[in-house]
Amino acid sequence: MQDAPDTTPQSPAEPAADSAPVGRVRVRSLTVHQFREVRPGTTLRFGEGTHLVLGRNASGKSTLLELLAAVAALNFRGPFFQATPFHLEAEIAVGELTLQVEVRRQFEPVRMRSVGDKYVDLPPRDEAELHASLQVPGVLQQWLRARTGEAVEIFPRDPRVEASSPTTQQYHGGTDPLSWSLSHVLGECATVDIDGARRLHPRVWDLYRRLGSHPGTGAPFDESLGALSTIVNGGLNVVRGDGAKFGGPWLPPSLDFDAMGEPVTRALSADPTLRLAIQCLGYEEAKLHFGPGTAWTVGWRYASPSIQFFRGGRAVRRHDQLSYGEQRLFSFAWYLACNPDVAVADELVNGLHAEWLDWSIDALGDRQSFLSAQSPLLVDAVHFDSEAQLREGIILCEAKPRTGGEGHELVWRQLDARESDLLARAFAQSRLDLLSDLLHALDLW
Image 1: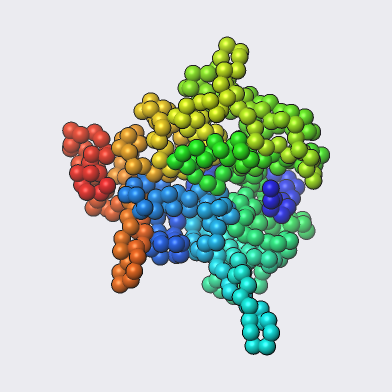
Image 2 (image 1 turned 90 degrees about the vertical axis):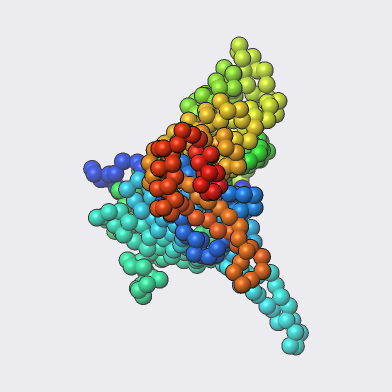
């Protein structure tokens, strides 16, 4: 398990009296300049609620969900991004704060002289650059630049637009901006001089602390049982010991624990969403059990837990004895417990009865959500209350032949004003109350 460099800012000496309340994360926009077959320049803007990602097979729906999950967590080192050059921009709201982020990755060829005039081609060098600007209205605005293996620099103005000298340079061993997190970027951007020391700005401290304990998984809820496999087959890693506490993104904060190598059992009803899921499945309780911790460099490592479900005070099922649909619903609840702000789910309807699908939609609560759908069941389970919500909330994906070239490109777009107005009026006038029927009738899906 690889951990990011420890760059935790010092807390402010005195919290500000007007500190902002802890806010929610929202992805406001995504621009794709370069990513595989996606049409360069694609820009999408998002609202607060639910977004449906619609399109035929191989139109890039899963690709878009992967990008959104990574942007929400600001981590681009997952297996989906392996050996992939890209260039993305995004706007992320964190409560009252606004983060503008640009991240670029490229692979530079490397040649080494061998003998005489002969050269040997070495594996290309993986290089990344991240720019971020943080704005706290009326209080703070700073720009950050981080490059692979170089110092992290903070600027008073945007260095991409106006030449300026950094106000600070911080050297972190092996800087890798692709493996950072939203809290890491926020902490770097919001560090200022207070009483002669580099400290986190008081208006940001509560947000920074919350994001540190709720980092998000950085991956979507997949269309099968990948999330459950991650939980029980090594993707959930917890390190505990003297001075060591690493939980990882797949441990819900409500299930956190302290241990010094002994076995650990946690009642899953401690998490509100998991408690409701357990009841929905017809059980009274479920428990997570880790065997004895494995000796680790800084303590003990806990991984690959078992999960048991109880009725009448007795264990009656293990996680691997549940039906496919039960495993899907339970692991979706776990995913939501790990992602309190932004939920991204691929083909959520798979394996779920209509009642369980309704439960899953309700469990999203006030999260910003992005859901891909092939089934009308999911489309019709999501409600839009206005034309503006329709315009922001329906994302159409299509694979089109490249103009004047070979192959195809992925085209993603949202409804234009004419389409959203037409759909809203059709919704109001039609006796049909199913969104899927109207989308088909208007040739939008």
